[in-house]
Each structure stands twice: as structure tokens, then as C-alpha cells.
Image (cartoon, helix red, strand yellow):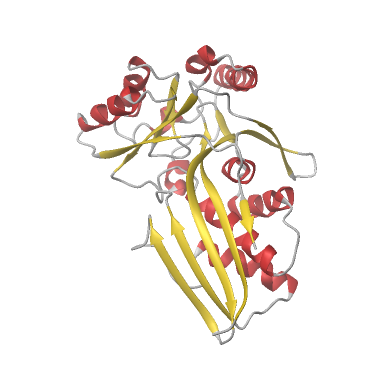
Length: 305
């Protein structure tokens, strides 16, 4: 078997919303999806998947990585005879940690490199937005750090990225149950009150300023949300109590991660007490979980070919 070309892509996980920043904030996490694509002589596509989701991820054209790859290759008229695709995934599936965005970005980036194109992260952000419908996770996975996203008047996403201040990391508690994004969005109201909108707007601004300035003592109040988390309580048993347990144990702030059901807390480096407190609090609701202490990712997408 003669190898024509190999592309290796690494994409980090992400936590979106961070409380009040619904669909506009994301942060990169040092938990990766690694993709290796090799073009060889022969015919067909061989797909391998190890790690998180290995027993549930489809190994055909409906695979998110594969679908993203072929969307690029078909658009460019590039038709390889045979591809060997291998995914090694550390990101829990359907847990609010950006697994779908990471898979989409990995596929888009690998196909771009395979076809001889230049990796333009901003362009990949636009393509990811078109496929995902929101840019918060994609931006954090592409650029790393703390990302604030918004839409230009022409409907194209744009962003500002801030590096994560030193001295903090993430405590993430992943429950034993899954929650699909569409189900989590289905419980949200069509409208909110003026007062709720004003509260959230102020906290989004304060959270952005807190990260940018390093005033971490402001994280707890600025990460509190009235926009989406109250409506998702019914889907995530013990959400309020688990977040409260984290803060009482020393976390700087704790929120639902993305659409859930994982819960994300900002903690001082090396402080595992908040994560263990979250795990214990969830156990009191009969929910089993696993706890991960993770560094933040300030780099984002990596491509080697």
C-alpha cells in the first residue's frame, strides 16, 4: 500500500456559554480529538474510532468528521481513491463539551490540508458556523483561550479572543447520562423579560472584563445566568446544588457547560476540592459522574502534514 499523503489534526474541547454568554462565549479545554487521515492507493474509505464514543459513533458517511471532510472535497472537486481515517477522541460525547464542533473542525481542517489548501482559521470558523448554527464552541476550539463571538451585519461570525489568565484551570464533572443539544434547546422560551435581558447583558460584559483584566474575584457573580440555566434545571437534576457545592468548596465560578449536562467550574491550579464536591453533590441526587481537572487550551487547532 503506497501512502500518498498523511495529515494529522488536533482539536481541543470547549465549554460554551460560561453562564450568561448564551451562544456567544466559549473557552478552550486541554482535552483533544486527534484525527489522522492518510490517502493511499486503492478504493473506498476506512474509518476507525478509538476513545470516547467508540461504540456509538457511526463509521460511515454520516460520521461528523467524514461529512465535514467530504463537504470540502466535494466543493473543490477533489476525489481521492482511498482514505484511511483514524480518530482518537478524548472528548465525551453529548455532554456539553463541544465534541460536535471539534469533529466538524477536524474534518474541515484535514480536508483543506489534504487538498493542498491553506489553513485559514477564520474561514474555518465561518464554515463551522454554517454547519453548527452557532460559533461559540467552534471559535474556542479553533483559536483556544476565551472567545467572545458575534455576528456582523452580513451574517458572518466574528470574534475576539483573550488568553486565559495564569493560575486557573477547569474542574469538569461529567454525569453518566447524555443530553442532546436539540433537547436542551427545546426547553428554552421564545422570549425573556426586559429585566432578565438587562441582567444577562451586564454579566456578559462583566465576565468579559474579568477575564481580560484578570480580576478573577468577579467570576462568581459574572458567571451567574438567568437566560438559559433556569429552564434547563429539569433536564439536569441537581444543577443548582452542584454549582453551589463547587463555589462553597472554593471554585471561582461554576456553570452548566454548554447545553449540558456536564458542569464546568473555574478553580485555582491544583485545587481539586471543588470538583470532588460537585461529584459528591451529584451523587446525593443519585447521579453518577466522573471528575476531570483540565488545563485551559490557549492554542486551538493544530495541523501537521
